[in-house]
Length: 138
Ligand SMILES: [Zn+2]
Ligand SMILES: [Zn+2]
Image 1 (cartoon, rainbow, N blue to C red):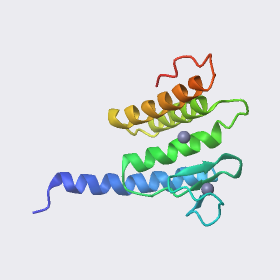
Image 2 (spheres, protein in one colour; image 1 turned 120 degrees about the vertical axis):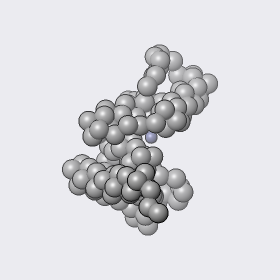
Image 3 (cartoon, protein in one colour; image 1 turned 180 degrees about the vertical axis):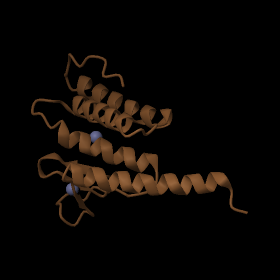
């Protein structure tokens, strides 16, 4: 028996892929499997000036979609002088705004993950002598 919930998940999945395709073309993003960049990082990363996102794993999931939005957030908020924690914060704020605009509900667990990452980079910045960060709360 096909459950109604399973069907809804499949429809949502297709919709998420369509949303991903739309924003990739809207923001003129080039995807790279790692072969076009010199970095051998295994994780998803972005080259903001080249508008290139490397090693992003496309999945029918909110997490995958939000990762993409976060990386595009780096492209759209690529201001010189921002420190790591500030770059991560503003990229995530941009992603949350865009997700809201697209009608996507981002789970608390995802927001918590990014907040912890922002806090980690902020703490590291402070340990290295940085100050005046502000709260940087999502
Ligand atoms: Zn790269
Ligand atoms: Zn980031």
